Image (cartoon, rainbow, N blue to C red; front, top):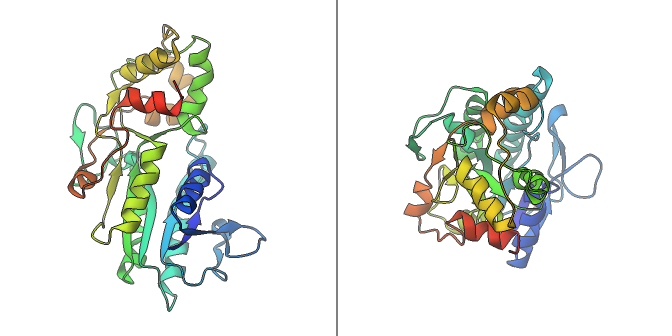
Length: 294
């Protein structure tokens, strides 16, 4: 399959490109700025798909990183990069005479908002906070592609675990020094996915024509933050005795910390279960031991 990939320079996109090529697919990155092949500039509303002929699939991962203090300008970049970038790409795909068969478009479990102890799946309502509103608009922007006959699958991605990037990579130095601990009360639920399984889910969705609609890209075993930190410390053979109080999280990270680190989202991958996807790493400790080679 020839696959157009956005966000190819991010840690998920970089590793996904390697994985897809190892499966025999041909990956065509959609670059920003001057470059051979297809290019785009979502902020400027420019896209040129020259060089992306005979594309059978699209994986759309591009978006402004969530991590960082959420100033008004940062929040607008988060929203615009996802919503307007997705709309620009979908309009370009829909306008083609030869459209791809399938489009995997990243979304996030932030779609559900802070759900406390409640278990949510793809049929659950969306939340009302900033991340939930962005996710709703983000997914809605794919409708033009779906209306043109492309099979569209928004994947609501949980906390991606990899030492190569994301939250785990940022946590590792502290935990290796024995300075890790729970965040806030530690009772908030974290829904996570090993990077290997995220690759597998994307490939599964690309390869199975019966898969459509939203997928929760999370392992079936959500864990509390306290369980996560204890497990990580045990895998690293280090103590985890220094909790980071809720007040400190809010002081250091602001609204972003409250919406990501302290929010509780207990997500079940119902659609993947129905579609027969077999997780390589359904449980947190084996996943961390594999990822950290412990």
